[in-house]
Image (cartoon, rainbow, N blue to C red; front, side):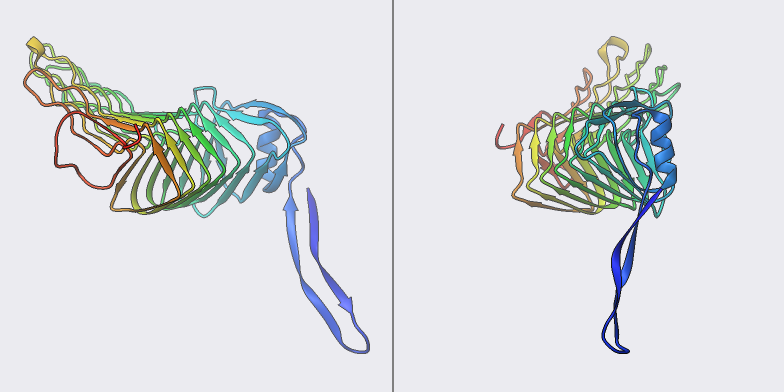
Length: 336
């Protein structure tokens, strides 16, 4: 561990002394080898860890961040992967976790597959987050709904998330399929293809959100009655519930919210399709402030309904901030 000092203590003429406060910055030993063992050791030491290596680090299990940590890969090429099997990081309450110039890929869980934060502070600078999947579980029996999938890359509850000059691409939240039964279950909800925020403060500057998606779960199948209803989808890129989200010079391109389709029923009698809100952003009881940001080719598409049941409602190809009053179809933002 290395400790650096930025301060001074100086003696002046006579009996007068001048001084400046001492500021100590704790640096963990640099990560010399890009593997899981070295990464975990650096994080356990706390403080700021830099990298003296390039490479991909495959995690066998989620790393819990229990103390203030900064991972700084500036000038290096470092990618941390969940191998499509595990969440990468969980941030505990009251803890600050900062990532600089790090790639986060291929996380898998039900929520926040790159980072799940409950009451923590997450800072991302010049990072790329891609190919994360937050998938709800499938229902298992009579009236059993699919589970919710939320925050494909990041999920935060009563915390703070700040991202600067980051790219979020091809992340997905997907609801689970409803249970198959004579009385089939509905599909699960999907919220926030890239980011899900609940009672949290989100600040995004100079970021890009590209081809992220929220996909409601398909209803369960019934051999003797109606198929289950499709699950709703909210916020192809971002879903926020409560508090505030500020987006400054952020580009949203080709993000989608797709309501889940009905499950199969007897003689084609499926259930209702799932609703879709906010191809790019869906906000509920929250304040969203957009400054110099652009929305292109984002869409919200309601799920397919059964033979005698309606399809899902759709609203806000770019941004949805309230429950829609119209039904059926596809909504795209004004630029495509």
